[in-house]
Amino acid sequence: MGKIRYLFKRISRMNYGGFFKMVDKVHKKTGKNRIFLFFDMVHCGLKYQAGYVDYDLFEMYHMNARERATVITRGINNSLIKRFNDPEKMKIFPNKAMFNERFKDYLKRDWLLIDKDKFDEFAEFAAKHPKIVAKPVDLQCGQGIDIVDVTGRDLHEVFDDILSKGQLLLEEPVVQCEEIAAIHPDSVNTLRVVTLKGRVVVAFLRIGNKHFHVDNFNHEGLAAPVDIRDGVIRFKALKKSGELYTEHPITGVPIVGFQIPRWPEVVAFCEKAAKEIPEVGYIGWDVCVMPDDICFIEANEFPGHDIYGLPPHRDKNEGLLPVFNAVLEGKDPIDVLNGTK
Image 1: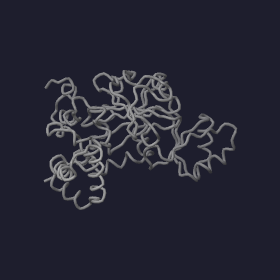
Image 2: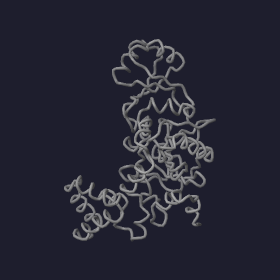
Image 3: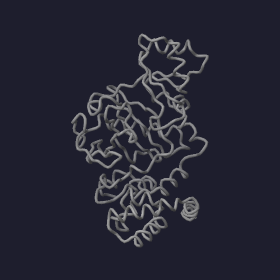
Image 4: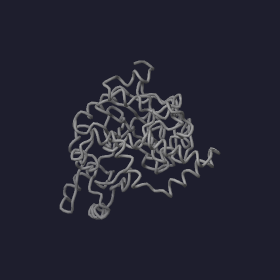
């Protein structure tokens, strides 16, 4: 019944203009017949809960039935969120102030929530931290975040400017380890580590680019999958526009073959945190590996599926659903990756 409800919901909300544009786009890329593509997209929607964007994104037109059944599509991802994430408990995660309070033991840095009456607290914070990360409490993907240097500045002016931008959450800047910083020193290059039912199922290193201070796709960033078995990057880093990189385009630091420092600690850290709120069982954690510790930057209660098992990051043209299913069945996901039961 869940698949049927999802299908009717998608049909009622479908952008039919976008659907037919996608048929034309895939036709131009592949040369496949438009009528065939039309019915194949419909088939993938019915059988695999794949939207037409999924069909193109995961290149399902180049996959057979067995391979398609391994893709985590939009419908499957949404069903995981609905099944494991309680809507009330989820509210903790998109609000950065609520998240910081609930997971304060995992932050490993000072932070302060301000309003117009908290100038004195702000001044004390600025005296300890000449550089401040100023964030809105309710935006995602690095939006609205500034690094504010208060050295030699009028603190009243800085305070008023921060408030005017709605940046009510202030944090001490995190310092990443030298190994990861070397790839792109201008940004904190975070790990996106996804847990399902308290187990790590997928991880990516997100890398800044072109001297931007954030590491996400929307600011020219790169993403490279991390092998959850040992923390090694074995595939090229991908840019949103499709370019692939064996080494960083600015610094030249190798990406393929890179070993995430203290990977077993990262896994244990995320799996411990994943048990803090059992009612939210499917979470994407943004993790910073520090010189001597590990910390969270934030977390996402609605993990995006659109970086899972993309074509340049697939082994044997298979997606990651078998890894997720192993956890759902109470098995070890590492066994699936190793080819054992």
